[in-house]
Length: 342
Image 1 (cartoon, rainbow, N blue to C red):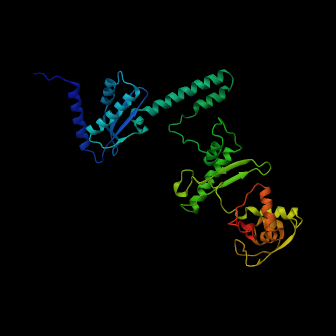
Image 2 (cartoon, rainbow, N blue to C red):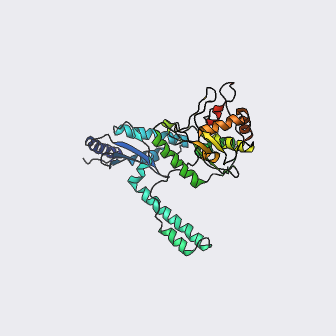
Image 3 (cartoon, helix red, strand yellow):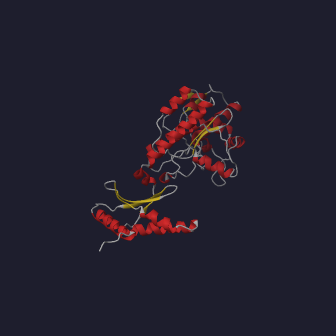
């Protein structure tokens, strides 16, 4: 008696072939499930060899036979059930969803060709209306079509988050950030943090002193670097200003007539009561002009000028400049504020 070929029998034979192939693999294969606009594909892939062991086109057939008259929610449920069933049939415990499946069907090549044709149409239109000349169009056609995805741009993410939170309904936010400078400084911060240690971070801000416009704002060494707490915006975090107050101290001293850039000041060991500041390198220069003391960021001259100005007056000048200093507890301002003791 002649055997009748049925879809069920064909499916059983196919599953037996899959089991034979699976038994000969060194590593556990995976089921890759992916979809296009109209079709759903599934393949059993041996990662150790890169070979496709079986293509489960019956998954699409199963869904096509069941989706008639179903709404989107029901079809979505059927998709989940079908994936689970096929995984169980193949003895695979995990289902991997990724875009990698496209490479097994030549989708990347097809998309690149479509992109090349679309680019050609745009160039033809631009040339026809006079936006570009023939030489520019020809040069553009010679450019190679990208074969991989470009990383999503993420310049100044901390600043972007802050501005978006401030104006959540704004359709567009205009900044003064220089994108080229921002990209260079983010790269610089990333390399500096790597040199400093695995848990170090860096914050940078560049402003135009003529108008106060912020040209670059680097909040950390990496927005997604959890080990460095990269989500913390270092430009907004409370921390010691260090030597950044020295230009303000010297400028205030000049305004008060306590000296000028060529005034000599002694850079030598000096005690201010119990406070005995040191230079960062432990050395002293002796007599030095104020301009040189500021250029070398010497600590002793800065503290001497703060003593002459008065810490309270310096705090007032900082307030007028838009800075709100935070002093520990109710302690009065002391000479240490000259070196960032805030």
